[in-house]
Image (cartoon, rainbow, N blue to C red; front, side, top):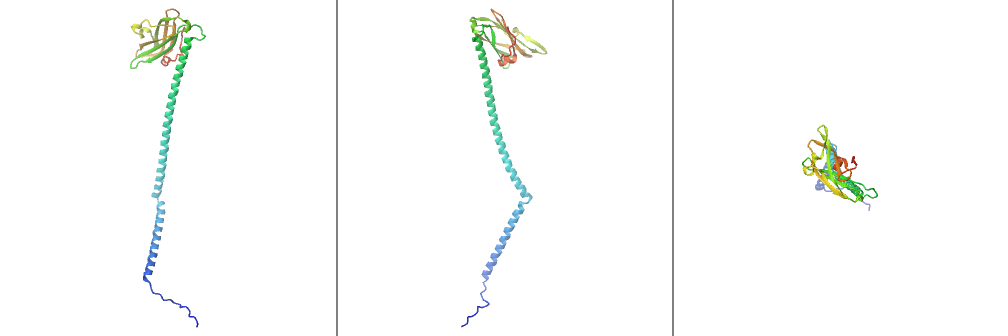
Length: 246
């Protein structure tokens, strides 16, 4: 029996619901693609607008500004630490300088006092220090006298002062009678074997500018000793520039 050829046409029932679903999905897919394309195009277009460029530049500048502020704060803190360390170092150096000067003065004092292998020596003005009296034109004076310990005998006498300076447009000298009080009109008396420190307070005129202090030491026995000390040296206690003397 011969086989029947397949039919050329197939009749199927028409499914309206399936067709509507297919069209709905196609519409949704098309709409979604349109929306995505619009979003991408809009984003790209917005990023290239002047407003978007300005916004990005503003954020970039803001970030750089914050970085610079932090760097500046770090530098300020580092500078503060450096300033504190430098100030502390300067204070330490000043203290060391003062300590060294004091040790040198003590060394000179005791070397003078003991004498070492030196010959027997007489009186010497070892130290002079001036200090202003606050709120006045008065000055406090501390004066140290020494003699070589090898002399082995007491020395006594009196010390008088004079101050040289400028008053108005003239160079003048104020003697002890113009500086000392009535109770010390004969000078500052002393008596010692090795050393002694004397103290006095004197007043200078308000229009007087001192430049030099003269010290006259007159022992009861022996030659007088005269010393001239620059005023600034007397303020610092530095006697390396003592002038004159016998």
